[in-house]
Length: 448
Image (tube, rainbow, N blue to C red; front, side):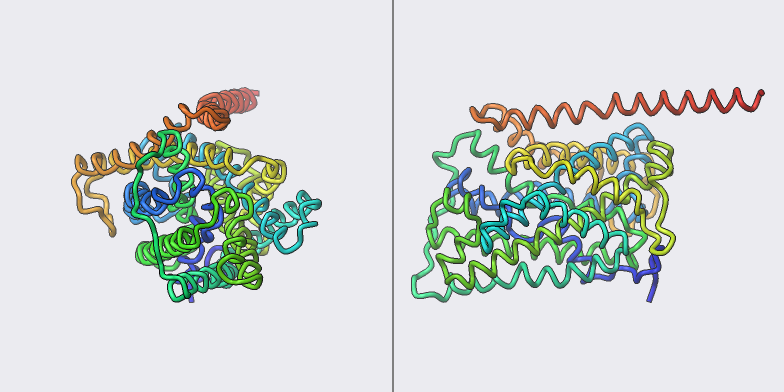
């Protein structure tokens, strides 16, 4: 069996598929607000159509770029190669920011589902969140193989209760009945927030490429694993929404109580408890998997002298970027009080900007390096790729414009996300200034 740089076994198809599943989804937890935004008739329609327009182009782009450069750092290295160090920094900076926001969601979700079993847990929200944050960091420091094995176990805990729920839905005493899908009567701002909800529950395919050198036969393994993960995500989401629509649960009740309340309605307390335990498992798996991906990006950025050298230090025993992991966990520890809806808007906006740089990089590499080997190649010429990438860009701007015309507080996180995007340029200039000062100092020292 091949070994990774940390001495652990490299990830194979099934293990990588579960890590990708948790990086992207981790179960339908977080999908509950969709019914409030889209209503019963549009929820299923948006859930099926949005991934085809938003995810499939992203997955294809990721697979081709990863087949060209299956290296540690993934998307950061792709953008750097295609667009230069400055835009590589943009990619790393934006990804780092949105992942901090993303990681903060999962300990909070853990507490919410724990509270279904033990209502008094809400009084200990911060300590419980911090325990999840640092246990996930410890697991990542030990190595990639333990993370992969843990996600396999957690995936069963997450998925099995929803299979049971769907079985009750289909084979129960009440005939299955769902309204015809339609966007009729849905406001533009509601469509925007519904799209943001679905997009958030489907993004992160590129995150799993940052540790490509720790995957066995990465090109072939990523293609198979990503396909398995995508089908699993779609099937689980569709099953859950069908069950939700069948039992006609009130959108406000679902939004406040989560899917465990649906389990109570469909089965009994045991099913509600099982779904709540699955939510806790999903939150842990998501946190560990996403932390695994983001911790590799500061490591390679430090190698390019864009971040302090100490971030690039590897653990003497496990060979993992433990300083990077500790820095990420430290930042997340201060971000566990944000609201879920606001985090979704910030998350998707920052992620979309980074994803669009990857689209541009693929197009530029097709033009600059047409002969470079691509074991996985999208069977389209460059001009057709441009047309394919316009589709997810359009979906994103529909969502963003819907948020901006809304009358609620959704504008604030969208504005915050835009400010965060703009912050990449001042940060780049500060780094350039620091490097120039250091270089000038070294020149003076040599003269002395």
